[in-house]
Image (cartoon, rainbow, N blue to C red):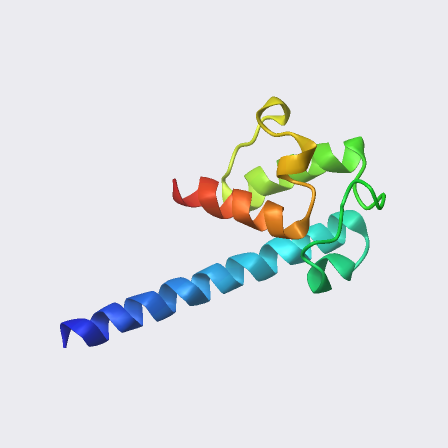
Length: 97
């Protein structure tokens, strides 16, 4: 019985993570005005022009408002947040810990 409960908890956690990822990708698509971020988690956000300094600032505000994760611009470098996959990972780490 205990193993079944653990399995259910893992499944629920995975579902929440998937929901969070979808929400992050939707947020990025809105900010970048391009759905490519939903399909390619490795697309370079800055090099391709999907994010500039203004959108970067908007991204940090959106992350705080939607996920309660505060990230000061001085806390991250472009290389830490330059792909959708890295944005997801950063939010996931900060939201948990």
